[in-house]
Length: 393
Image (cartoon, rainbow, N blue to C red; front, top):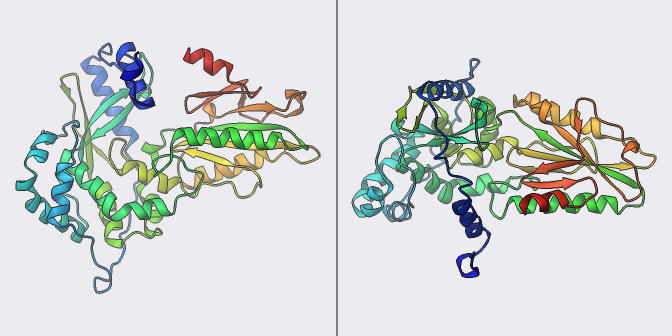
């Protein structure tokens, strides 16, 4: 590729995808029975048989006012709509964008009424599911990720509320251990933090090795219980009208797969934070924000959305606190009803030069590997990146 064709890593990867067909799904053909079964699978994932209705916040309307928009703000929001997938209402993005002057006064009244009553328009809460393959040739239902495609105007409403009214609340209380879905955060920062922390520990004279532990949640976004999320929303600094508005956003949702000419049956859902929506990632960040390792000192936790990595230094003449840190992680998982996929939790020992892996006892139930792939980067026990470089080349 010519240098003039690539302006930054984002454009470079777009060119790679185009030339290699790396993300081309044209070769994935699903029969109707598979699509219906996949629709049932996604519906079951997001259905809580023991559903507990979240309680709303009590609001003193004499002292607290509902957030509102001006016609100008709504018009600007409509004008900023980019080309995007059309949702269940079948109204494409350009209708709203090209007629912003006409729609702005009406949408302002609807949006402000929605915020004042903490009630979402029902038709904006339904979603078509786009099944995105996690692997090149998916065969099992679990090898697909369900991406919600809601009406364009609903997504515009979400992002405008976030930008003007809720971003500060979502952002201000986030732990420094979280690198995803936040201003200034990215996977590169998370990887640099991991590498910096273990190299820093290895420089200590009494450190023989560092244990890198990759924890794995099972269907993390789909398993968030709304009652538990509501408690965390209510304990935040967010305007109570917005808290109740977001809780209504989660209520009475429906979804169905629409893919390759097949439209499946509607499924009611009452669990999870929706991947593909504007707010879903921020919900998840808030939900997992209080996951920290506090009972085992000097054990950094690095989170990128649901990917969590622990670093535990192995010190001379000091008890290894790896099991203690893992137990604390598991306790949080259990108390928040966010199950771990323990079969996919792994460990790797990063050794100081001249040390042997045998000096570090294995953790029961955790597979030990000579390399671990975290956020697309392969870490090796030698602190080199030979496998990663070979893979990329």
